[in-house]
Amino acid sequence: MSLIQQLEWRYATKKMTGEKVPAEKLSNILRAIQLAASSLGLQPYTILVIENQAIKEKLVPAANNQPQIAASSQLLVFCAWTDITDKHVVAYIENIAKTRKVSTESLAGFKAMVDGSINSLTVEQKQIWASKQIYIALGTALAAAALEEVDATPMEGFNPQQFDEILGLEAKGLKSVVIMPIGYRAANDHLANAAKVRRNQSELFQFI
Ligand SMILES: Cc1cc2nc3c(=O)[nH]c(=O)nc-3n(C[C@H](O)[C@H](O)[C@H](O)COP(=O)(O)O)c2cc1C
Image (cartoon, rainbow, N blue to C red; front, side, top):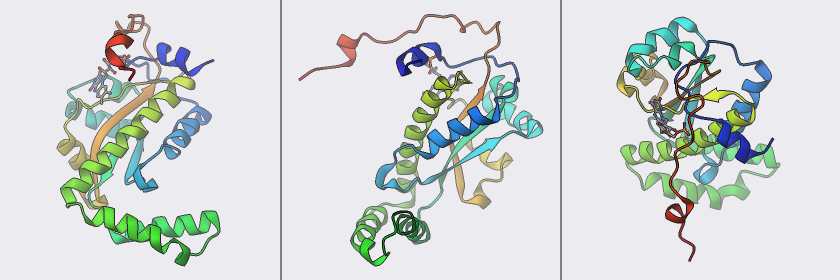
C-alpha cells in the first residue's frame, strides 16, 4: 500500500455510514497529527475528538446540515489557541528539556528566539499563524486516515462562531478553525467512484 495509491483512494466523503473506526486506526491518525510539523515546534492548537453522538447532532445545523457530521465515527475539530502566551512557551521549553534531557538554561537562546517571534505578533496575527499550523496538521491527518483506509472530509463549511458557542470554546481559550469527520463512505455516496479532478502537473509545477 503506497501513499500515492491511498491518496488516489481517498476523497472528501459526502456520506458516511456511522460505522465506528477501530481504536487502533483512530490512534494512528491521532499519532500522525501529534507528529505533524509546526513552526518553531510549538503546536499552537488543540484538537477536539468528538465521539458523543448528541453533541455531533447539535453541531449539524452549524455545519450547513452536512450529513458527515452526524454519520461520522469521530468528528475532529481543529482549534487554534486564542492567544499564545509565555506560559505556552515555558511549557514547550520544559518539554524539550525533559524529552532531550538537557537543561532549560541551555535552551535560553532558543527561548529568546521563540519569544521574539511570538511577541512580535498581535493576538489576531497569532491566531492566523496558529491556523496556518493547523492546516499542516489537517493535511497530515488526511494522509494518515487514507493510509488507515479510513474516510475523512476536510471541512470549512461550518460556522466557527456557532461551533465555538456550542462547544464552549471561549472558556477553553480555543477557536475552531477547520473540522474533519472520519468514518466510512456510504455505498450511495455519489462521489465515491468519481474520478479525481486535479490540475495538470505541467500547470501546477514550474521547474526552474
Ligand atoms: C480546507 C478545506 C475545506 C473543505 N470544506 C469542505 C466542506 O465543507 N464540505 C465538503 O463536502 N468538502 C469540503 N472540502 C473538500 C474539497 O471540496 C475537496 O477536497 C476537493 O474538491 C478535492 O476533492 P477530493 O478531496 O475529494 O479529492 C474541503 C477541503 C478543504 C481542503
